[in-house]
Length: 56
Image (cartoon, helix red, strand yellow):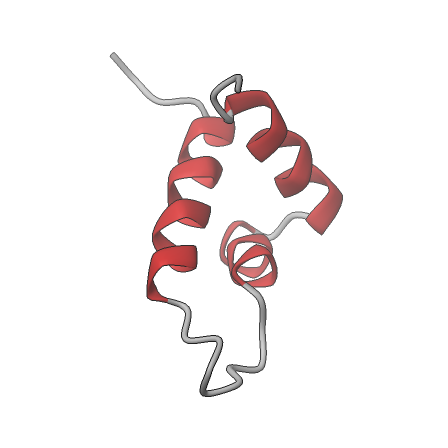
């Protein structure tokens, strides 16, 4: 079952968020890292995350 680009963006964001060290003051947010990796605007990544985030 192939993954859609939106699903891959969501999984990449989750992984980047888990590795991000907020105490050390890394320069780019996990959202920005994913946007740069996929070459898309941040708004596209936000929409992909919102679509794949589990309902609470």
